[in-house]
Image (cartoon, rainbow, N blue to C red; front, side):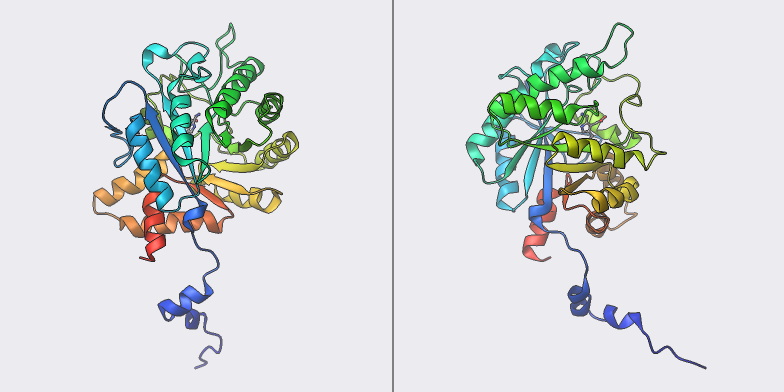
Length: 329
Ligand code: PBG
């Protein structure tokens, strides 16, 4: 009988030694909280497909944002949910300074100043009557370059409203370059761009569509990436870097950890990953059924995204996870 001399179990034998040798960890400063602000409601509205997440009023948004900052989260990503009556084919409420998203951004910047990084979703889908991320041409296809003109208007309005960082999530070609030029021409050289570099068409966005009251029929497969493809994310990375991206992102996170690892290995700028609505809801639903340990599953999911290479993680659990992390529980 020959017993092993080399025993990897030694470094797993106590919590203290496991803590000592852990390669990655999650810190509150690395977490970004996505939030929804909705027009025309007077109390926060629960999102049934995302138990625990709400559409905020302006007031509840401010309170929840203050709490997130107190717990040390690194940033807030704001999405707007306009009244249906304010949606049109172009999504023009998105560049109206009094549109719900811009009012939300202004309120957050007024309250929080530079205490956290205030990010804006720069995409038309919440504001268009057809629910697509861009404007449509005569044949009903999403028109790339006509959409870029609207993104430029929207991005400048968001910067005017106080956003520190824009997150163009629509997957139009050239969106980073166009936004960079538009911001620079408007005197917003200091507003940065979080590029949705690798964004895949995914059924895991399902709960988000309820969260933003999306009007979409059909899918986004002509602009978001195909789940079968890995290499093209490196091409998207090269383009976004060339166009001036300050941070690059991979989305969804958990079904694209290979893509995240590729992008993290090749990127000269910080890398983010978005743990999306479906990832949130799957863990939440399984835990509600008593099938998994909720908190442990959340921790492991965040750790796996960090381990794959994300410097920054967008997660609906940002405030809660930051609370545990701060208290060391
Ligand atoms: C679209 C957008 C989506 C998400 C963020 N921005 C949905 C989509 O592309 O269909 C998804 C976020 C989530 O699922 O949590 N602008």
